[in-house]
Length: 231
Ligand SMILES: C[S@@+](CC[C@H](N)C(=O)[O-])C[C@H]1O[C@@H](n2cnc3c(N)ncnc32)[C@H](O)[C@@H]1O
Image (cartoon, rainbow, N blue to C red; front, top):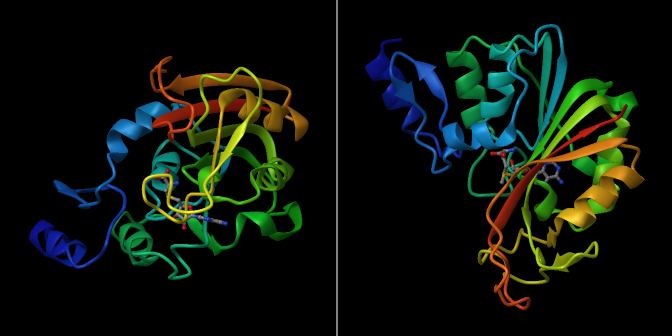
């Protein structure tokens, strides 16, 4: 397929990610994927590692892990891949073909994750999913059960001016006018949940700047990435 044909085919799909398919073709998603990659702090060399990408959507981070040498990458999703959102799994499948990728895929809800279903992974990516969940601690428990070494957790945060562990609840569309956003934990809550589920070391890798004057009743427009290790 020529670059023009590839671009024309890609234009028919509803994308989230911007993925470099080569030959100057970048998938036209609204997400600033390239910049967000720096926010994740993926290890530069993943040679021989196994990676699980939870909530992979179009798979940009899965394909990036494969590019960095991972020997097995499993992309997993539920809401979007199951056709419950504004897009589908079409982008992931298109990009996988275009990149000639061996990334595996599974349609699975994070609450159903277990070593029996998917195995265990050296690196688990859990980016942009936690705040979409009604049961964040349960989800982190499931995530911990399949992680043997490192977890990269990126999420929206709220209540950032509180020192105690706290999780904001969004029963309606309070967060970004999106009814699929359910919770906004603060960093102490994230750290506590990670330690409660067995992670021994937790580090804040990146965080949007905190405005100390922000009213506590408003949804805080914050985002963080935490890195956690089992040992
Ligand atoms: C905001 S997108 C994040 C996509 C990607 N991880 C990123 O950081 O760009 C949230 C993704 O999580 C998926 N998701 C939401 N709830 C899920 C669940 N319970 N189990 C698995 N995936 C879920 C959605 O389908 C969607 O692909």
